[in-house]
Length: 498
Ligand SMILES: *Cc1c(COP(=O)(O)O)cnc(C)c1O
Image 1 (spheres, rainbow, N blue to C red):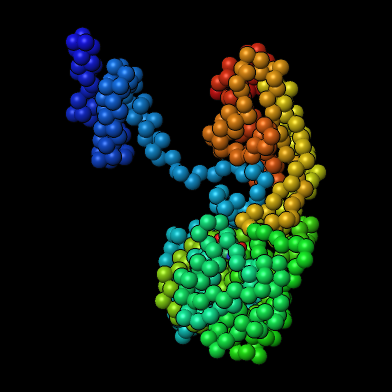
Image 2 (image 1 turned 90 degrees about the vertical axis):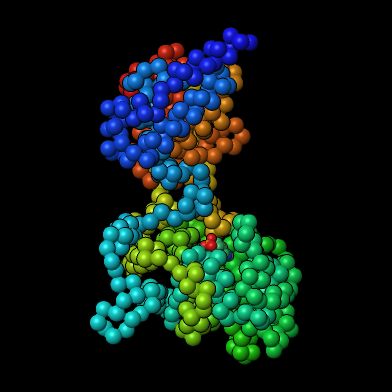
């Protein structure tokens, strides 16, 4: 017992003093680059971790044993702390607009526009001598008018904010009528009844889950009704014995009764998606034609732009939204507005949309190309692997509540454990491979179904990058599992130890 205490205390005595660490030339070099405050706090953490290791395991970390190890350890802690949490990943999940992976990717024009406004002052709300000091949404408003025919628009943080503002500014303290078939929940916190309550509106439910008629709406209108609201059932579909009252019918009723017709459209496609084999999404421009007064939709779903919420429609109502105190709290910054403007400009030329916007580039990529990519990958990886690698047909979903029923044909590269090749590693699972791919220099994110890891190739941005990352990562996996010698994987792929 006494001996153990003595040896533990001997270990504590081996720990260097902070002052002596700060005198090591390489550490001084790091201080010159990174500042004393931060480097000192990293060193303090190293000493704290070392004391913990002594207390728990009666041993010293290897960096304590030699000066060069101290600087290696410090360098590795610096580089780990400097790694950005939002580094790029390759989304092969089979969901193109993945909310947890940041939804839409921007077009190059949007990236350029954002870079510029980040660097320089820009006339966001400034009178440039033309006599009118427009509000920050004016430029987009002009574009939206050009593209959808809407009188005016209001841009906020996301579509949830758009719905909140739309309700608060047009119907606070009043009744809003919604069909029981449209009381939507969009993931966790966004639920129509809750948003209504937050906006200070009284929700009046009408009809049934599967059928709501014009007369149901008409019967619910009182002198306290401010609006009828339609909600696009973007993430579910009711089929069978159903009846939905269309916007055009409701518009006539609302006009006659002097109330507003508002619509939460969700994904807001500004272009017809049937060219990809997807079914027609309702488009804002059509809703406005049908007589809806305000339509709201997201910027980062099928529009393919930045996270934003757009409310488009009647100038008089939009002016109320712009003047509401919540607008100030929900407004977008210059980066979002610049990215949105550049994205919307792409819609002036529908012919080039499929090549310019990443979302449409992926949706329009021909199956034969995906097949060719799958074969290239299979040839590079397959017969030297402890996994059976097969090419399988799969289906991509658009995601983010867009088009829940509609799937696009695609091709997947599938990994399953090859029991013969993996003998001696009976515990090997595709879960380990999935984890390994997620730790790659550019993490590859697939999906596991029925003991197979599926990589849906429709999510690929760059074929050459995918080939490179996948070969390197799989090789490293083999090496870490001790397989490379048995199956000669290294010779085959020409990847020397790196
Ligand atoms: C996606 C969606 C929302 C929420 O939009 P965010 O941009 O994610 O805030 C609201 N309503 C509907 C119908 C939607 O589809």
